[in-house]
Picture (cartoon, rainbow, N blue to C red):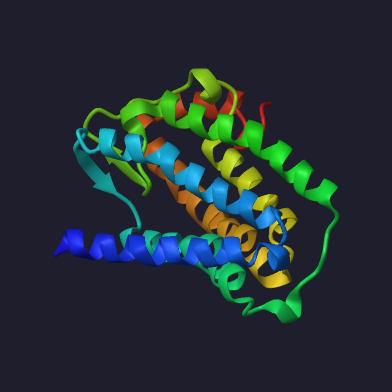
Length: 216
């Protein structure tokens, strides 16, 4: 049953992507850059999602709230843009940017995705898509985490902030960064409380020498 559902969902997604390609003259080539970006984000995360399943979860925080926040980001960051690009549903809110804006956005994605990949690699088995602690959870303070506590969030901020450069629509372009902003400002405070409860003074010392999104 699960396999059939996955195949059906995959077929629908491929159909939507086909329509988006067909609507390229309307949406502009930035839409293809955005689609490639979302695909790359998913591909980079898949092996880490499988890997972390081997590390048992011992504590979860704000489970119901997490579901709402993740759903909000999925809707604003993926589904709203896909609906618009495939159907032109929000065409009344369209605007047009020159090609150089798309090029600038694509250039920003290069360091953003390097940081996104490196953040997952440095976290290893400690990473999870939700706010949770695992049986073998370490306080990672090396690599890209040496001076930045949330480099993965920094990377996702960059990925979402350039979305309006690819999708020239006030609704579909801004839905991603706005949804992620809500998630970030709600989630990070209780995530840091969880880390402080687990690691105590070591985490306090780490906070003093590192910034949330930028090095101190």
